[in-house]
Length: 233
Image (cartoon, rainbow, N blue to C red; front, side, top):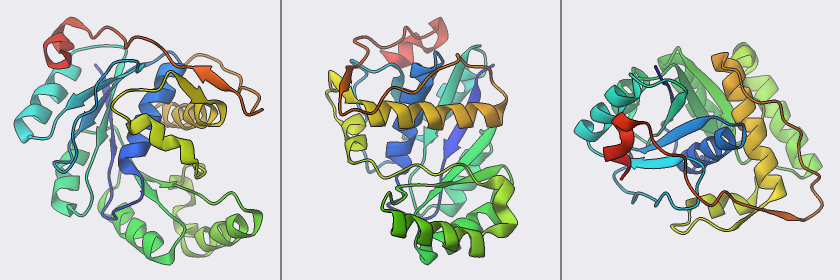
C-alpha cells in the first residue's frame, strides 16, 4: 500500500504548498512515483503536464477520502498531502492518514513557538526548517535560535531547506521546460531525507554541479495505476 506524507502546520507562509511540490518533484528524480494532494480550498489545482508526479484535487473531504482509499491499495507510490494553514482541527484529521507529518517553519521566534506547539499536538510529526537563510550571519543566527529553543526536539528536526527563489517555478500552471540545478539538488536532498525517515529504498544519486546551468524537466507525468487513472484524468 502507498504511504502518505502530510505537510501541515498552524502557521501560514511557511511554504507548505511549495514544499509539497518540491518533495514530489524530488521523489520523481529519485525514481519514486508520487501524488500531490491539494487540500487547501483557497488554491486552484495545477495541471500535470510536464511534471514527474501527479497533482490531484482533494479539496473536499469526499475527494480526499476517495484518493486516500485508492492509494491504500497500490504499491510503489507515495501520497503527499498539501495542507492549508490555520486549521488545527483539520490538521489533526489529515494527520490520521499519514505515516509521516512534516511541519515547515521559518527562523522567526514566532514560527518556532508555533511549530513547537504543533509538534506537541502531532506525535508523528517532524519539523522542517524552511526558506532557511543562506547568508552566513543570518544562517548562524537562525541555527542558534533552533538550538536554543528546540533542543528538546532535535531528533524530530529535518535538515534545513534553503531559500531558493526558483522554487516558485514548481507552482506554475505550465511546468517549465528547464529547472535550475540548485532546485533539482534541493528536491533530491529533501526527498532522500523523507524516504530515509520512512525507511523506503530509493535510487542512489549524485548531486549535479551547481554552475548556473539548467536541466530539462521531464516531458510527461508518470502513468497512474489503474485505480487512480480516473481521478488523475
